[in-house]
Length: 199
Length: 347
Image (tube, rainbow over all chains, first blue to last red):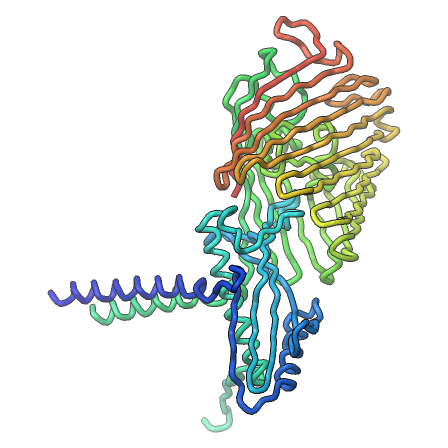
């Protein structure tokens, strides 16, 4: 039984390491661009596909991704933009509630056999509770993501950064799926059938 | 034992991995919010003079209320249930129940988004009228205005709201014949409407009307403009005429709310209010019919996370010496002044 103690230590350390890895994994997906603004940026090689094909797929993705906003052609060649917003939550467990909304821009640019995209221009609009008990945006208050830590403290900012990174990771997988033109496969659940004839 | 430890570690790892997944796809949570507040007030006449709502105890460390709100939205349907316990949330804001001293409902309603622009809501709701609210977390000043005190607190009813754009919306509804009661006196015959406009970023204005054969008619303008990151200006103006069966006269008033944030955690605000009780039989919580009051309140909000400390100084000046203020010698006076130190924890 003496061997159990080092075993327990090893397992405990593994769990702690796993927790730390997962906790930090999300936020580290975000980087800074040349202007020191938060960005989620990827360049992807797509051999055999032309710029036009990739652009069309990117456009279809943008049109379907946020149906309340139409995509627009960008200034640079083979570029398109779309924008949107999503809710971020403050607090944990029972005290979790809408903390605000994050607006963002997605820019996709294509060339022959390659495309790149960036998710950027993150702006935070804080929410407050109104007289009816709903969390609503505070009019006129918008905070660029880069300035959040000066207004809201590290813990709160890190919480929102994790959620933003999670959103970017999910969006990236949807962009990849659209660019690869992979059909969305819905897993068919097997129907359990019995035979009452032979018994 | 070894197998149990291994199983436990895999379980913990999978729980963490699952919770670290896409948080944006998680089912909207049951939202719990609210506040608690406590205060000390000192009226310089050595007794409470100013008749506006809440912060009524003089020279006492007193409590406001515990406010607890629940909200859940699944798909297009949502509910809000909000209770309050304590002097501010009980006898001072809403009628007592039969036992005279119980918890009170601030909001209890259900809501449905017919489309993303059109919403239907029904139940017992905070009033849509006016600038200030019952919850101390929703006001900048701790003491309240005469316009708030004399206006409605709750209006049970059914309303429909249509958002033409993000800058213009219209609400119309029917409400019980009496303000601030869980049930109607006789019927549902009060009409209410609100036009919201947001002409430029940071500026929102609400034009409100509430009219009924028993509840009277009030027109109200509430607007606020975040002019810069640091400076905000608010305005509330209203006029009220009671129903014929209730009396004649009413009230009218205007209040201005400039606020300046001097740092991330400290904001100063001034409230200047002119309130008049119109000539007639209708009595207000304020000056006598035909008279008026000018109230100046200087307030600071000092934030430490969810806690806001609120020091406040207020000076009210009645037009007539017999309008209700009594000095420390027991003689009528035109002026009343008080200092309040409050703490509000919002969650």
